Structures are given as structure tokens and as C-alpha cells.
Amino acid sequence: MNAELLRIVDSIHRDKNIDQEIVFNGIESAYMTAARKYYGEESDIEVVIDRESGAITATHDGSPITAEELGRIAAQSAKQIMIQKIREAERDALYDEFRQERGTIFTGVVQRAEGSVVTVNIGKAEALLPRSEQMPGETFRPGERVRAVLIEVRKSGQRVKLILSRTHPDFVRRLFEQEIPEIAEHIIEMRAIAREAGYRTKVAVSSIDSKVDCVGACVGVRGSRIKNVLDELNGERIDIIRFNESNQVMIPNALAPAQIEEVQIYMRMGRAIVLVREDQLSLAIGKRGQNVRLASKLVGVDIEIMTFDELTEEIERAEATLSELPDVSEDVIDSLIEEGILSFDDLSVIEVEQIMEVTGLVESEAARIVGFAEMKAEEAPQESSSRSSMLSAPSASPTSSPSSSSGSSSEEPRAEGLLEETRPQEARVPSVDDLFGGDPTPEKQEDEKKITAAQLFGDDKPSEEPETASESPSNTEEAPEDSPAS
Image (cartoon, rainbow, N blue to C red; front, side, top):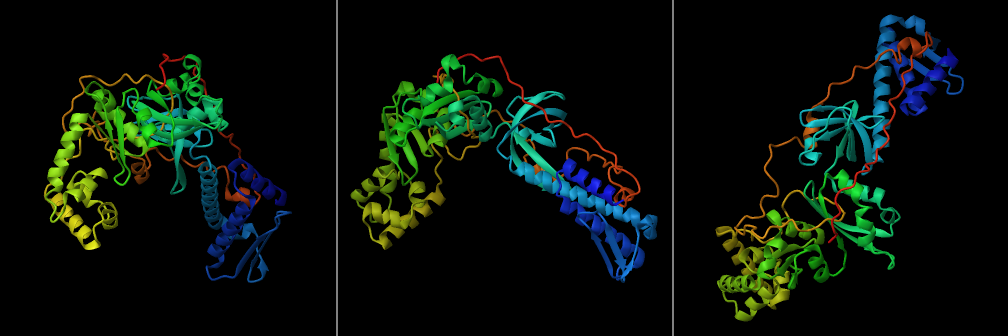
């Protein structure tokens, strides 16, 4: 029996990736529980398993006991405890393994597509691809291969839930690392990514080698390097931007293909006003504000697009608004406007110390200005500009690949609230957190024949089941239409 026990422990260790010490401890605990159920909870029971020989030494009040003495009921209890211990250990081992793989792309096979959740077999485990992490318009059928990035690994009861995503920035990042050797070798670095999954992505890249053109290397000859990424993203438009440390250079790059006349940056406000000609206005804003919104996310600055005439009108409105401040000179108003403070809303979010630094006022005067601005802002909250990038707008994620930027229309509407909608409204789909309120897939019935009490105590041999083989990724050969990089 001793050799049989060691074989069982080794088999569990190899098949389930569970440490042998955990299995030994589980057997000792199960044996002890069975003995206490037979002799009483207050009994002095001691169980020790020799790790080298597999010999079990069990005593009750100093007298040796054997498994046969415990009876069927006690053995059944020991079996249930052992199964639970193995499940917990298997869960912990699976959790530790996949926790190291977060941010990694997996290629799996769709097992089920039930409602808004797709179940994908990724080899050792099943993962969930919720509707909120699928790209717009995607559908999946059982048996179909799918690639996605692992973004969440969570313990849920006796199971580990793995959440995949095809909309997360890391999905595009990992695709580029797979397809473009210079990125994988860190010769080219992806400095910033902004993505609206299924629609458009902007990515800023730079090269540590002056001989390597970062944009050209990502695109390849006639788009040969980027075509697999574009295929995987179902034709999502991608603009590759040359990164620059200076926002004066980076912002025009990010707003390409629009021609920018002037950039005024106000870092205290986290704002940039970009001036364009009238014929470039809709191109700079983009369809539904997409171009300016992605550019803003890429640079990290709230961008507002204006013509020169609109800037003049904005400054006149700011002068009229700020002139309502009590006991404030024109020089103070001019100083505020020069810092990009154009409304009571702007003024109400500035710290008193910053007002003192900008205007030269003493603390009491600066505090009075801020207090007055907060009161006026609450009385009449101003609507956000239709040309603003609206950094708080939803749906941003990373990507990087070339594509033409001709998607903006010359007839783009310019009414208030232009940027509030980024895509057609859809019915609410479950989020990742929703998935953990209940199990969307039925629990698999545990095969109790794998490890029975009798096997643990040496009465027969365990049955063995082969593990499911992991799927290997497939490569797409078909290339999309070439499109120039920004």
C-alpha cells in the first residue's frame, strides 16, 4: 500500500500541478477527520505519513489504528475531504499559473457561445470572452478559433475564472510584438496608444536606433508587416504616429492628416487649443469627434479645435465673463486668460496658490476669486465645447498600425454635444464584474472515480484521464488593402 500511495501522490502532483506536500497534508487531514468521526471529536488522534516510504502511522490515545477499523461512513467522509482539498489545491495552482500570464495572447477554440458570453478552451482551462470585451459586430461559433488577451484571473468559489479581451489595449500591443520583430526586440518602442475598438486606433512609436524608421518598420513594404494585425482587428483603422517629447510637435502629429496652423498649450489647465483653417476644421475633429478624442488620449492633453475667428470670440467671451470678478484689474484678467483660464468653471478648479502665482495677488484676494468662481459655476454650469476632445469620453484602447486618415467628413456637424457619442447606442451587455455574480456555464460534474477513499488507503488503483491538449495559434495569410500610415 505504501508504494501505491506514493504513486497516487506523484500522479496527482504531475497531472494537477499540485505540490506533493499539499497532497500529503490533505491525506493526513482526511485520515484524521475520518478517525475523529469514528472515535469522537475530542479524541487524541495523530496521523503521520512518511514522505519517503509512504508508510502511514495513525494512533488513537497512543494505540495504533488502521483504515479498516474506521468503517464505510468514516471513509466516505475522508474521501469528500480529500476531493475538496485537491480541488482547492488545483484551483490555487491554476490561479498562480495564469496570474503570471496576464497580458498574454492566447489562441483557443470556442466551446460555447451562450447569450453574451463566449466560452473558449485555451488548453488547461476554459476562459470567458464577455460581450463587453468583444469588438463591435463580432460573432463566434463553436469550433471556431479565436485570439484574445488574458486580462483577468480571479478565484470564484472552487474555480478560477479567466477573462479574455479583444478590445483591451494590450491585445493590439501583443499583436504588434508578434508581427514586428523590432518591437519585440525593443528597438522600436510603443510610447502611447489610444483605441476605440473596432473603429480606429492611434499609436505613437519611437526608435532607439537612428537608422531604423519607426513608422516604416511597423508598416513594412506595401503594408506587408502590418497586414496580419489589420486582419485580426477586422479592418480597424490604425494610424501610426511618430512620437515626440514636445507637445508642440506631438499634437499636430496626432491630429494628422489635418493641417494645423498653431498650437497653444496651457499645462496648468491640461489643455491645448489647436487653431486650424475653416476647411480643416471637420478633418481635425473627425467623425463624431473621433480624431481629436484619440489624439487627446494619445498625448494626454485635453485638445480643443478652433478657427482663428472662434478663438477671438472665445477670448472676448472670457474677458466679459471674468470681468464679473469683484475688485479685479484688467491686468489680472489678462494674466488668467494667458494661462488658458477662460471661464468660471476653469477658475473654480485652480488652486489658490496657482492663482497667486499667475496673478501676483495675495492669498486672501486669490481665495476670494476662487470662491466667487465656484459660486458662479454652480449657478450656471457651462456646457463643454463641441470641439473639445472630452478626455472623459468612453472607449479608448491601444493599437498600432497604418491606415489612411480620410475617414472624416467635410459635412461633419458642429452642434453642441457633438462628441458625446462615440458609437451607435447598444443594449447594455454584461461587464467583467457582472460575470462573477454567478456562473454563466454549468459546473462540470466531478469524476469521483479519480481519487476515492479506498485508493487513498491502498485498496485499488486510480483511473487516469488525459488532459485536454492546448490549441496552437493559426496564422492568417490573407492581407488587407494597403493604406498609408499617418
